[in-house]
Length: 440
Image (cartoon, rainbow, N blue to C red; front, side, top):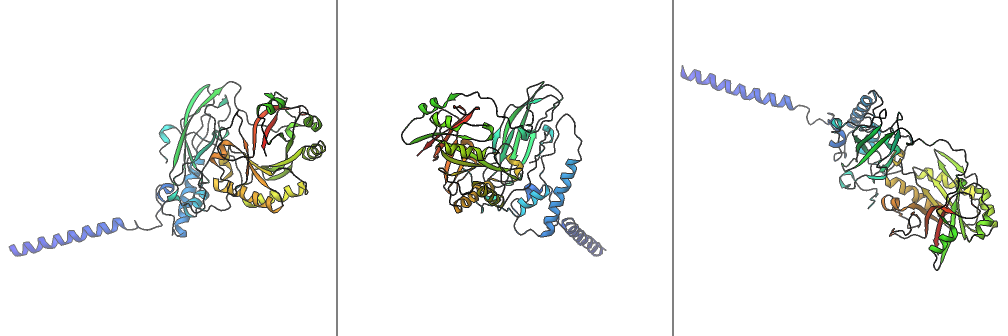
């Protein structure tokens, strides 16, 4: 009887072991299946983008699409709410799986910024080489412009993108979250913290205090009527020349239609050596010729001034740049110039709207430089100190036209011309005008 009992006990033990093994197998079934969608795709897959199959990519994109739709379904009111914490499915699919640092850019659309309440914020040198992977990227995103204490009129919409610009060496669609709330229906000061996070997990944050005021706050710019602004110069051209005089230096102005009618004979008589003219540019997808360009170049040359031109750039990829240079070439019509043709890309307040990274914008200038050289001219890069230090790499080693409004620049890189002020006054120009020192 004891032997029978022992056999029964032994049999039950074996059954228990078998049952336990079966439970483990069933509970773990599918865990290694790549078709399973992780809970936090943006963070979980950054280091696992190699060799991911197409079905997995599609499910990742769907997960982001569904999150985006959930966000867009939220209501809105006077208090700004969160819609910008999660990126679009298309951009994430590209950044996670392809890391394409090629042409870059997409149709420019103004982002609608949002504010995330504190309880909902749990989401998580200029290296632009194309072979940098996400795992090798240790550079934080950068705030390119930032207004720490903006004013918004009561009752108006608060859009943080009106008060800052940001970008990254690799990521074209940086995750931005804002901690705090701004109620534009009530006067007061509203502190918020803005956090930027790229695909590699690098992050940076900065504080802003939004002041809701009864009047005098930010208003979106309206279409101008082309009327030049009244002059209120900080110094005369004679004072400027005396302050920065030296051997092998020239002194001149740069102008566009904002200066209106110009008497270049008087400009020359005031001691001006040269004039840099805006030929035109690329704006909102269209090429244009500055409405004063043809008059300016004829009159400036007749007055005996040396001549240069600049191109107002907003291109997002090399193909757009090539079309811009074709347009520029037709307008220029083999005109002889005394200075390099300047590339002037400066819409950095809202850079995030262009769908570009720093590699993309540098490829735009590289292409401009090469295309201008093929036309038989020389190109140069126009930029302020901030963006020369934080965005531009000047891969072609071209000349730099520095903009830095200070009594003495501390820029340490090479430059052949310095735009020292935008509020100068010279006889013959009836508005404020930019003053420049040229170093021969």
